[in-house]
Image: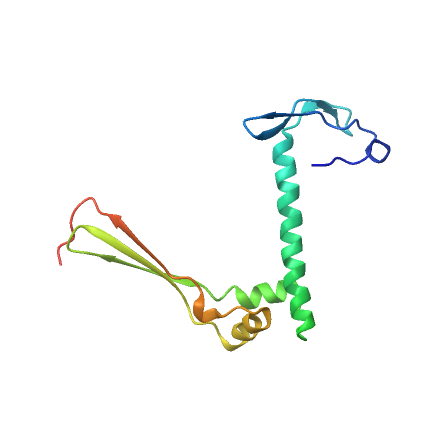
Amino acid sequence: LRSLPRAVTGFQPPIFSIRNGRVITVRLIPLPSCLNCLIVRPLIFASIFLTVLAYQLLRFITYTLEQKGDHRDWPRLRRVLQTHCYATVSMPTRSGTIVHVRRPGTPERCQQQIYEKLGINWNTLPTKKITAALKTPATL
């Protein structure tokens, strides 16, 4: 983990301590509003990391599609793909358990084209089967 240079931020670099494999900051940092507060740095670094990761994923998707001739922006792609969803079927059994089967739906043609351009075989999307106990046995 790196912090911005002192010349850029005007702040001193943070002091880290490691406990149980986690990085924890114990320094009080001056805020622009001239208030001092204890900032939970792992949460800040985690949110920055996830934001950068999400942006890289978004750029990978849009760049790959642009290379294949699809120049739609992210809001349009999201709107097209959000209607492709999974369905869950729950079935009680005689033995007193319930079986949940989660399967992807069949995408529309425009969604299939996007999956093909990204190299995703929509026929092999995962299907999950979960068995859970019921409080009372089912009577069929």
